[in-house]
Image 1 (cartoon, rainbow, N blue to C red):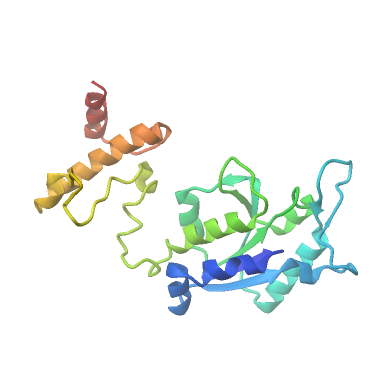
Image 2: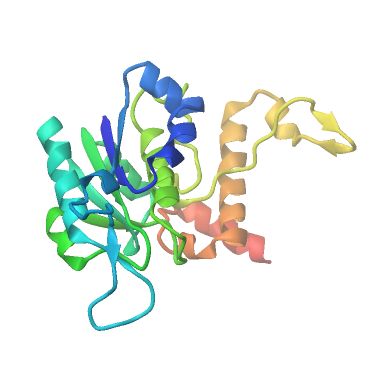
Length: 241
């Protein structure tokens, strides 16, 4: 996958794209990153990228011209089709399902908003708007990094194990079950015996039930949308007693 990022602060992406799993994905040729400085495409004398909003109001608005020109330059460099996304607090809320959709794309172009927002006319060159939560941050750079990380790890070969993404929180509608590692005893706290006996059927059953309990406790709203069996429902009912 090729990922192009349009931003006013390209230096913010250096550490993210050059570290850990994402760095290995680049080295292995699974992901290709290109970061573009929107400011370089401003046609104003002082390379301005924002201006006062029409109709008045607080703050500044990102101008359409630098974004349009930057986007055009990106596609002159490589004309391959791309899903074009704006990081915006008013966008669709990022979910594991959306990340899965994006992971199937061959190319993403991500625009990082800033200031009080982006000139609405930019929407004509976009396919989607994505938010990482019901809150506002200073700019779209951090949300873009979250999107990139979330999507990248679903690309085949990026994670060390193909099973890693299957059992994670939100996959299948539930939160992930508790995890333990060595030692089996630590400061009086023991790993559940079921995980030590090698009975994979019992381990699978325990993990399913623990995922149900964790979801019920921390995110009960997810249970309404999760695919639950009759056995799951009975277990949850008995857990309430």
